[in-house]
Length: 479
Ligand SMILES: Cc1cc2nc3c(=O)[nH]c(=O)nc-3n(C[C@H](O)[C@H](O)[C@H](O)COP(=O)(O)OP(=O)(O)OC[C@H]3O[C@@H](n4cnc5c(N)ncnc54)[C@H](O)[C@@H]3O)c2cc1C
Image (cartoon, rainbow, N blue to C red; front, side, top):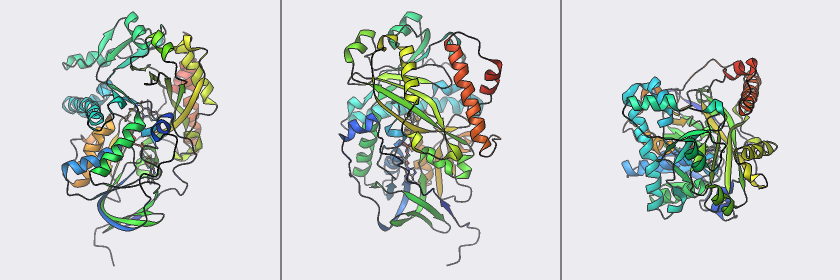
């Protein structure tokens, strides 16, 4: 049949390599799955028709599915996941569910005061809604509203938040409490913390438990979920078809909630840098953590560009992560995005610098995951230029646990045609910058990354970074 006039037709092909590159699973996922492989949801086979097909079973896809069922219960929703729900960033992250108040000055620049305030309020509400979901779905222990400390662990970082706090105060907002040095050291559990602020509305979560509970809730709400079902292509035209290895799904709307894997679509990849974030966890040491006061569940981040983030677990482990561990060549997610490998030792030494009393505690677990760093540092929500039946959200930039709840509302409205989810135009556009093509992009990325590492190491030692490193570090397009 000839396509209707004015309707563009074409195909978006995804890379053939399996999304799951190695057998590595995060501590969170293994804990939740009880060390067994669940085949809770069958793989997709055959030919089906659905109203909305969601690709990706992380927080974004799952919240979107639930939200569609809430706002338009008659909509038939199918979700396909290449691996298992929660196997991507959603089951591997540090478990910090944060608001967007820390991004306020950036949002203000991008979309003006009204939208910036509204978005920050919605992102704060999103964190509370995650807690409400956990309570209502029998996993209250998976979400603890224990707050977040935004800290300085060297002199250069002191006061990093001041500009944001002052700006917020001008708009009558006081989401953070200023702490005295003794208070921050006590809350964060070590004297290495020189200064900081505390945000009470932030949660420490067991992310895999949340992801698996979201999948069960979506299934109970009538969403058809398929795992081990990797999408190979999307054919668009008068009809849209999601093509899988063993069949296809004809649909009105596609929601691509594949996070860093969306970078392989040129329109989306132009606004993203794919980098790894690495995490280590110690053996359970509840008494040691209690002794330093790090047993309250508080999440802590420092203020470096390649951020360190850390928190205790319910069973008394220290979880310590670092952003920006590896760069993707040509936006390709490979095995180095599953495990930090040799970077593990560096992470451990950073943990010991932050918590010197843990010098003898071995690392029991390590894992990594891909981060969809957007050039604006914020997620964006777009319809593909050539394929308007395909809605994409990407760009959480390592800060998606809380905001993915909000993203679900936006994507649900876009996919059902109800609206644009209240997103201002600035967040409905792929951010752009003049980046060189590969291999220059990769080589340049490594030069900048190396300079940031050296600059931050010098700052930890209270030394003046080399001018060349400062210059190169300033070229970070996501900075
Ligand atoms: C190590 C690490 C630490 C982090 N720490 C934090 C933190 O503490 N706080 C915070 O706010 N954010 C953090 N993040 C980011 C956060 O985890 C994500 O932004 C958030 O989980 C949103 O995920 P998502 O659902 O968009 O993507 P994902 O959870 O990655 O889901 C995308 C899914 O799409 C699937 N997929 C990909 N391609 C296909 C295909 N072709 N067909 C079918 N399925 C496909 C993948 O298998 C995956 O399950 C961290 C991320 C990492 C990696």
